[in-house]
Image (cartoon, rainbow, N blue to C red):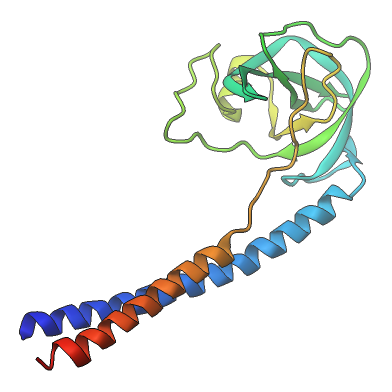
Length: 216
């Protein structure tokens, strides 16, 4: 009988946990919706001149005027595009005011070192470098798998800005620009309903256990 009561208590505790997880997903749904609306507004915002900005934020549309620096190219390995494996091509861009911006020009099937020449205007979305995932190898210059700004500033010998630019134009037909804004799904309602359903189902099981099993 003691074991049966312990099982009932454990089940009751599990119901409260499931309800808590479901409620947390409801809050996460509201947060994600607010962020997606903010992202939608950002996409409609006109890009601003990088040199005129006093501060930078992630996912900010900007443009910069200046030129690419020779011998300041890196490639992010193991990147795919339409099912094909290749690299992301990134170059250092020096603005008219002397700022150094890392520009991700896009995906290519091979390591393209040719640079657009002369004074240029690059446009795109600022992104914050994402930390490596558990499965990504460590960077070992000149081989890179993810963007590490302090390491790149040291190896490229330029003081890079903390954000990099995902450009909307690559200036090269063999380099395909990638989506600047992240693709974010809002599945929190489904997750919440799943947790609530588990709590409901477990509640039914406990009622059955209490009234038909414990009374035997």
